[in-house]
Length: 388
Picture (tube, helix red, strand yellow):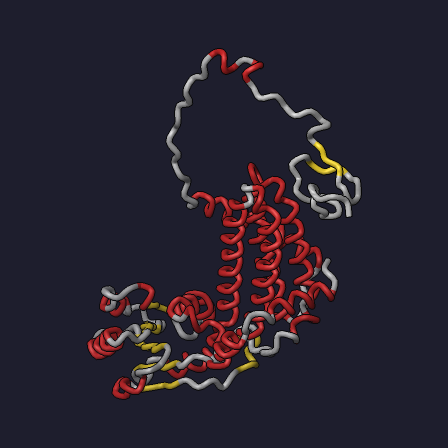
């Protein structure tokens, strides 16, 4: 487990990069416009966006522009326009015209077909069949499972550069945003480990890339902790996370030490285990923090160990898939010429230097270095200079 001083160094490393863009993205929020006819469920959806499913008593007052169809022009300029349509409505000519107009203006628009109990709504879905599935969703605004899974996932896909503000302003999206950030960071670390793992096959790159791994993986995991805090509405000061999550980041440091020990296996077997460690370490750090944000409690050592075991298996599968995508150059086979018989004779080979000729004594410290050394490997004195 890493000490507090180690973790302080980690966060000192974070200070080298400007965190203000992340903080600003979270504080800017998302400009959301909900357009629909009266009775379509538009106001209910707005209320659901502001409510935390894990803590229904907690609600935000984030602004949402709710508009009638006749006021749709006011939605221009929003980061996302959600058009709510009663799924029982058969004539959606006006709604489809508005959606097409927004799409032509490069506005991000999502059509939500609000499902009521009556079963005669299938014709409405057919009317929107010419739209991409990622732009049209069918479900009830009262269905929490639909909202937190299908609906939230589509919104995140449409707003990948606004996820911190989306989670911070609208609690409905927080868990989905957390999973998005954890998976994205875990895959990024896995891909990074693939690239350095391939480079470490070359011996001279081994140590410097190993050190770089430690810095990069530590930084990205600490970033993940900070971004999750921003998305869940917590402090914007990174220093506030050091004490709370020292043990979690300490565990991540330990896993990076394990990854470091795998370097010796890199040439043959070590790439996929190293990728699995990078993926699973990041995955567990993210979910340990997510658990705290949701419940206010840290997961136990046993729970963390079991979560890590499962994540390691997933990481191995991810590593195998990533490695399959690495291009393998097809080198042409070169047929070497047959050497003449006499060239293969023992006396045709250059004579090896004798042991006495293979070493050289330093004129300064008298210690022995290689015969071709220009400087003493112990005191750095020039080997060809007279003793001073």
